[in-house]
Structure formats: structure tokens, C-alpha cells
Length: 247
Image (cartoon, rainbow, N blue to C red):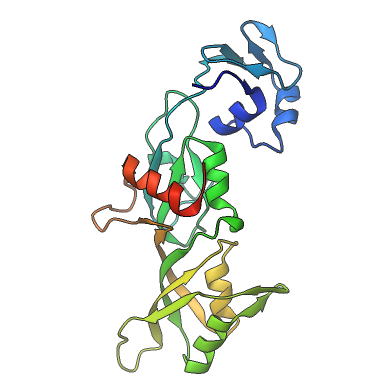
């Protein structure tokens, strides 16, 4: 059990803010610890009573790490709130009694498949950061004229907005004759915005279907339907932490 912890770190891990913005969050909100107004990044202890804008929380500095996987449907957005046109990915997640679910990485509105969420901000940030070296696997349908030369370039590396990017692996699924739609399994070690689509676009090819199948050692179960979630068991969480050397 932790003896104490800075309130900025605690609020960040609960998902109220991130570490960079935590000081501003403290100054811009009414936060009390044991009925005393917080004006700086004080240390808190287990079972301290924290009140944030009128909502009370009992500090739990040793809360167990929880991770869930979610099968994101097409059309949902990776935002905390739904828009007029699109539901948020958080709409179907189980309600938490303490803290919030924090997204690990993102998918664009036209991409479906595996999304991970945790109850710990540090853990989520570490797994999302490019330095973690986590590989992501996708199934994508690509429209256009495919050649071995284009595939070779995508594996060797191309420039996107002045930065080098590449797939670590490309495996073609058996294609239908005379079709310009081609299915591929692809892997890459970074999760930049729309990177899979942008990589194919450098070869004048268009991705018209994209599904994330795997994030690191966590795979999307075939039985998990779009819009459904499933808890990741502790063994798989520990395996993920060990492989990628996160907390």
C-alpha cells in the first residue's frame, strides 16, 4: 500500500486530467481534501476524502489495475462525448464507481475493431506512447493497382509529412480474380493519426475498410461483437506489462 501520492498524479490516474494539465486542473476547479481547499500539488493518503466540484471520492492509492477490451463499431468516435451524428465509444462501456475509463490509443470514425481501456492514466499513457514499441495489427481492404514494388516500398519506409514510416509486416489475403479490392494483414509499431491509411495513400492506393485485430499481446476475440466489451484477465494484463515493460 502506498503511503502517499501527489494529488496531480492521483487525478491523472483516475482520468480527470492528464499529468501535463494537472496543475491547471487544480487551480481551475474546486478541490477539497478532508474539507480543506487544495491550492497546490499536495500529497494525499489512502482513505482521504477528496471532493471535486461537489462530488466526493475516497482516495484508494492501491486500486488494482483493470483493463477492458472493446469492439468498436464503424461510426463511433473516440471522444468522451457523443456528437449529433456519432455515438461515443464510451457509450457502451460499464459504469465505474470510482474514476473513469481511459482510452489506450484511438481509432478514427471509419475504423472498427479493438480498443483498450484502463482505469490507470499512467498505464494508458505508457501503452499509447510511440516509445512503448507496441505493434498493432490490422486487416485492411485496399483499392487500386497493387505491385510488389509498392509493397516493398511500404516495408522499407516512406515519408509522411516529412517523417519516416513503414509497415513491419504485410501479408496478402487470397484475392478474388479481376477485383481491384485487395485484403491485407498489416502490422506497424506506431499509432499516429490515420497512419495505416496514409501509408497506403503514398502508393496511390485507398483503404476502404480497416479493422484493428490486435494491440500488442491483446487480440480481438472472434466472439466479441461490435459494441460489446470484455474484461482482460489478470494473466494477460501481467503479460502485457512484462512484454512492454510498463508499470
